[in-house]
Amino acid sequence: MRRTVYEPEHEQFRETVKEFLVREVAPHGERWEKAGIVDREVYRAGGKYGLLGFSIPEEFGGGGVDDFRFNAVVSEELARFGGSTPAFTLQNDIVLPYLLSLTTPEQKKRWLPGFAAGELIGAIAMSEPGAGSDLAGIRTAGVRDGDDWIVSGAKTFISSGINSDLVIVVTRTDPEAGHKGFTLLVVERDMPGFTRGRNLEKMGQKAQDTAELFFDQVRVPAANVLGQVGRGFYHLMHNLPSERLSIAVSAVAGARAVFDETLEYVKSRKAFGQPIGSFQYNRFRLAEMETELEIAEVYMDRCLRRVVDGELTAVEAAKAKWWTTELQKKVVDTCLQLHGGYGYMSEYPISKAYTDTRIQTIYGGSTEIMKDIVGKSLGL
Image (cartoon, rainbow, N blue to C red; front, top):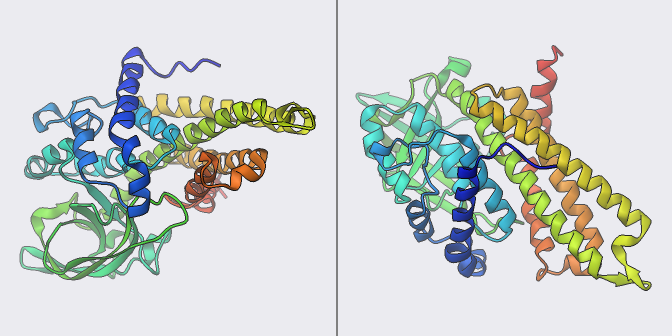
């Protein structure tokens, strides 16, 4: 079924993303995997290609185009590439919305040009050793001291935690105010008391630096408050749907890429004198995956239309996130099985896809949390 959500300018941009991946990413993937981190230079290259901050106003060095379909193109091509890639979706879809919607004019001048150029890398620090999906359990605290906030605490599982220059820290600034007691504070590289712990070893997505962060009496100026004091929880709830939609876009594109590669494999791999894809059981499994992927693509395109029109709801994003990531997990697992013993070998892309995919149903809000959001919307 032909997709109609994209215009010619999106497809032209897609070619730019593909060129970038071939020239700037492919030669380095294996080294990044071993190092556990990508080179910062790839972000600067992304800035030159116009792949970062395209929704940033032109006066700050961005493209001035507020169209999430461009975000989706980047997400899709990174997912289809299948190798080790920089965290551009984190920058464009997760960090940038905060920097666009919540910053003061002074903050925009200070941060957005570097962000668009790939010279400033962002991260958002929510998860803690004792608080993951349960944001109410956050213990990192900020205490007002004159015009500053003194921040103490620890965060973990922070994507781009090593490379980041700007870290949006979810901080409890009023322990008695419940959901109204959180504030977003931007901690910058080299602020005294801000240290980075381990670059955590993971089962997949090994080139993505994921770190522990520690804050020991870090003095954060009031000029680094993002949004309104006490409104941090509401700012998070407003921006999480774009993060979840981004994950869903990547899930469908990644699953489709694995399926397409597997389809070619089962046509050429023979057993008992015939292509393994021609056995009825395998043919049925492939037919199921093709159908489910196309249904997922239709729903994703509908979500993209709604986000462009400013109508996408948190519930719709939650539906997209849990369904597509669970589908991706199922498709990749089935495709690995169809590869047989070769699928278990690291030299085959399906092996990497298997370990890289497993986190999809966990970060950005687990499947269980997404289902709870949908369930509550039903009045339950």
